[in-house]
Image 1: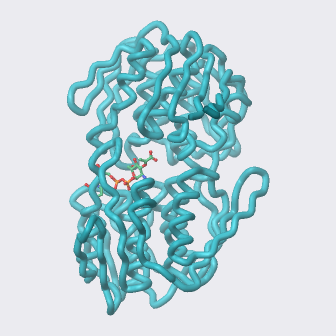
Image 2 (image 1 turned 45 degrees about the vertical axis):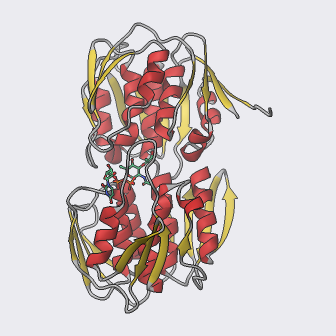
Image 3 (image 1 turned 90 degrees about the vertical axis):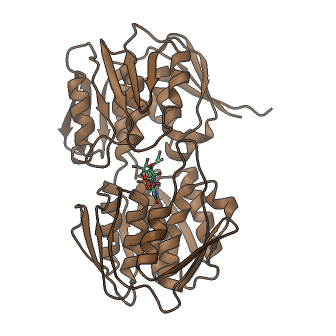
Length: 425
Ligand code: EPZ
């Protein structure tokens, strides 16, 4: 299996182009099932997860074509007729976001059979909020043989759905379903992540009527049919935040092209307190340290607009070499500290107690062979490797390929000594 090898110590300097957001592109792709007209998505990142969802859409009878210009892809997805409403286990278990086809399939076809995703490396991650919401909209749902069997032969009806806790995926699934339901749906305590907002804007472009976009109360008036649209995927705030941490840990100076401050406000605040400046420049964000030293900062993950769980591992890597201590608390997922033992193998001083990790800054990290079991944990090891003394080898690179486009190329263009080591054995 391929590895990433990094020799730490180079300061990152230059410009990194931030691509389209994976977590926006996935629900946007699922939205193609709501219409028989073409949905054209530009700025789609070229990642393994995008291909996995593409293969699932193929099964449903969607035709897709990809057009690449200057490294960015435009996808055209047409679900002229949905030929198969089953999302099988072998595809769903590879990527949980596959469950996002559930709402669109039930709304458009009156039925769907979608495998339950099961647990994953970062937690049990149930989909009860997706199922409860669809039931409120009139779907009959049974769990049979590991599958969600949903039926709504006379279509879905609008309903008021109050989420007991914030869920990005459930908000997206139900917003898509509501766009084709009879009557009005109100989603209360809805997720406000920029990826949810991006989906809402695309649905509006397809003819949906949605108000309250960007708030935690979304009102959707269902339509009989939706049209095609052309939509540009929002920039990936998590990719931008990751490279901001990478710049900060190396005491570098980098412009993150296409990144937007408004989507990273909580992250910018944490970085500021740590002694890192993130300033808006035309077309991007300029990241550099204020006056040399990094300071320990406490961080708690929360739904948007709070600090994102998808940057928790990366900020922890940064805090391992900050002066003083940092308390990092994870409130979204119950098991998202798999990077801790790996960072410890590189010399980090971290103690975990329940949902909090106390990080005491150390003078230096040292290279080690490491591996991680999810995307963000893996990239936190890349961030740490950039400053470690010696050559860090990161195994299980396929996790990185799920969510970071051309990672080695982007980092090495700013001076990092990083390479992919092919293992043909
Ligand atoms: C999305 O996952 C993202 N994935 C995740 O990104 C991200 O970490 C997460 O939102 C939180 O921001 C995509 O957008 C494809 P949730 P999602 O539903 O929608 C619990 C990455 O690294 N919950 O907001 O699955 C759940 O277990 C990833 O790119 C229920 O209890 O997250 C979790 O504890 C990983 N019942 C919390 O809510 C449900 O029915 C938030 O999950 C649904 C969720």
